[in-house]
Length: 437
Image (tube, rainbow, N blue to C red):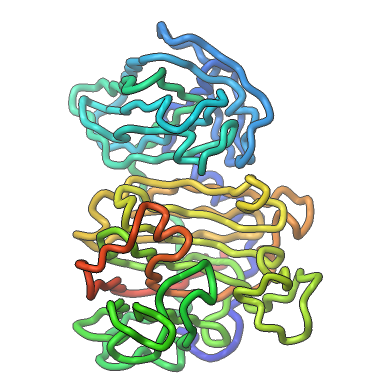
């Protein structure tokens, strides 16, 4: 296990890179381009042309944003739907692909999505889910749908307006057969302060980044290891310029790596106002910066473009007002929220505050895949067009934090002060790399 300050570099063979795609494609049993022709996705998934027996009308729209698979989102079905497929008995994950084709307000198109009669997506509003934008892709994954009678049935039922669906993937549960070797970890099998050979605290005032309402401290009150877990705990209290306190830890200079797999087993807090994250930033933030001064404090800067130029990868983001959804995202100069081209997806996380779940990232020179409990739900491909779209060719490090409020945490309404203290619990963090053949 590597615990010194050296970057963990992985040289993947072309065979290993091909195996990433194979492992991603292999469990797909159904893939359909709703309303359109056969299509091969950037992740290698082969979508069948739409030959469904459905009364829902076909439609077309152009100039889809926010996806590397824009052609898939240019066709759709509109209307109430019941889709039925013969499949083997077992457990499946279902990936739904949407975009709002019309210039309508939030609330004008709302629908429920069910499988086997059980609710998967309740009151789905595509426009709201995509930050109020039309013609922007939304990818939602639901997990653990059980088939016992050889038939999978999916229903889209209108609440307001008409449902829309652009793409559908059904995947069976699948174990990764590849041979991974752990090269860095913290198992939190000790008591007291987080291991300072692996973690450094950020000690920041409120509002430094993302409009966050907490101050970050290095106190045991806000971050400590006990009972085999790292506890990041937020409090409602006056601390410096803030009304809340919490902690943010990073592995810069202590666990930097280039390519591999990250796994973190985590239990999240519930309730409106929190914003949990496990994510990655470049160890050299100025790698692709163009407007920064030497050594500038770039985080929170309005003049230095180290972010988004040098990139960000979000393995886990979760906001308490939207308990069901866990998010995976990349940020780059070409694709981020300012230009409405954010590349992201989300997955059903209904029990994230009740149980520990596994959040993971797989990173190669060609692809990024984010997974939840070993279900991949976000795929991002190196387009080969330069650093603006792929700044992920240099070492990164990990960040663990529990933010309070902020631009996203407060988006669902005011912070619920009755919930404090609240905590994020981390069982372990591991970095692995594929064994060389």
